[in-house]
Structure formats: C-alpha cells, structure tokens
Image (tube, rainbow, N blue to C red):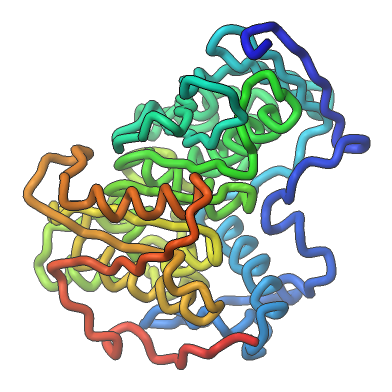
Length: 392
C-alpha cells in the first residue's frame, strides 16, 4: 500500500498538526516590548534576561523567552517566518512526495525524494538539505530536500528568487535560510497527512553541511517538531557567534564575519545589513540559536578549517550547552569539532557520537551521551558574564 498514490488535504482551520513552531506555540507571552531598542553588549547576550529586563528563573518563563529570541532573530537577522499557510495538500507515489501550498490566493508545488528502509513503517527520517553528507543508517529514511528550489542561493543576485517568494513576494524580509525553514515545515506538514509516505513525524531529524548546515540549524530552531538537528560544518552564520568571529578577525585570524557574509549571498534578511559592522548592537547571537532548539536533540559537527572559525564555533556552542544545562537537558546538545579532513567529509572519529544521538532521538534509545570535543580551549569569562541558572 505504501507505493499507492494517496492525496490528503490539510486546512489550517480544520486539521490539527503536531506542535508547530516556537512563535506559534506560546500565546500568553508578552513579546518584545513596544519601543524596544537593543543595548550594546560586547560579550554574548544573556539568554536568561528578557528584552524587558526580567530574569528568567523557570522553564515556563524560558518558553516565553525562546519565543522572544525567535522574534528578535527574525527581526534583526533572519527575516520574518510566515505563519502556517491556508492550505497544504500532499501526494505520494514511488519515492516522491509532492507538496502543494496555497496562501492568500497564490500557490506553489515542490517535491522531496524519500529513500525508506526495507520493512514496514512508519520510519524515522532525516530531512537532508541537498542530500546527506553524514552517514545515515539503513534503518532511518532519508528525505532529500532541494532547498535551492524554495530559495535560490547562487549570489547576492538571488534575493527574492524561489518558490517561497512566489508565495510571499520578492520583497519579503525572509532570507534564504528562513525560507528553507518554512519549506522544511511544509514537508513535515505533508508527511503528517500522508501516511502512505511511511514516515513517523515524531522522529524527524534535519541536517545539512556548510551553507546548508546553517539552514538546517535554523530549521531546527524554528520548528519544534524536529526531534534532532545536525548542522555540519556550518561555521559563520551557523555554529559561530558573530561577536567572537569579529574579535578573531581583529586579532588576525582568517575567518568569515557578518560583514563579509552579507556580501556573499542572501542567506540573511536585508535587515541584518545595518548591524554587520557593529555586531555588539545585535540583541542576539548564535549561542541563542542553539537555545531555540533546547531541550530537543542537537548535535553540532564542526571542522578546524580557519574560514569556518573553530575559535568561534567552540566558545559559541559550548555557551549554547550552558543553556541546555540550565533547562535540565545537558546531554541533549553535543558539540564535536574534529579536524584533519576535507570540508563536508565525515571523519570516523565522530561516528560513535553521531550514532549515540541518532539512537537516542530517532531510534527510541534511552542512553544519553554528553559530547564536548574540540582542540580549541574556551575561557568562559572572556565571553560570558552572566550566571547559569537551574530553571525550575
């Protein structure tokens, strides 16, 4: 039966999908205060201090703080993630899941390819931007997501090009990574209403490498239905923190910074351009991107290539692990930086850690493993001047 064509209709007003993105889950939170202006913060911003100056002490307050962080990152860096569209329909035939989306009188269609394990599903699955560059075990399905179809990323001339912008307009504030995250959410919508695809939507992972690793990180941050996020060698704009990268550049390191990256491609919102020469004026940094994923599974894979910024990714992600510690999920975030190999190749030294996270978050395992591996030393006092609470 799995190979038969089946079509299911989703309408936002009549079909309840699994838990949606962070900003759609919290309806009782205060949000960003009117007239808010970010303070200049030279070190990494305090995850546990709200925009109104309130200290976060409970997990309920942290859920609202996550919503606020998501809003801030969208407003200042990534661009606006639209709410769920009015209609999503899906059909499955062979290995192809076709997704049709309609919103405000406009429509698009796109497709993903699903490679399933043998046997009877539903199966856990990894959505792979452009195809997987990590080894996916035979008992996990692979969903190849053509993110370039949703938002182009050839150069700065790609702004506003792709099917996302057909729906929401070429002048939409969303950069390509936000558009891709929107696309991943529609894939999950479609899987949820298409049982013939044979995928368990409660066991979904997302991955990508390099520029696609940045995108996978953002998708995991924006959609809480993703059980495991695996950004690989995402570097600047992913696992690296803007403030730290700027400091390393000033010290003579060959590293990509915010000021350089906005001239390379359209991954970010045009709103970001005004802050790239003064990143301390941003209200967020990328340790908070990790914080948006918490307490769900997050395994960050990095390399020691200068341009990726190992001196930035290590302190940035180890600070992200402090957020996981605060919410009582220390082992749910792993960071592994292993060098000596080509960009986007996967070294054997990281296999056991990857297997542990796949088993725990996609295959029903119960064994946790804390992973913090890097050749770079991190003096916390250099970048963290706040106390890590134990949220109740």
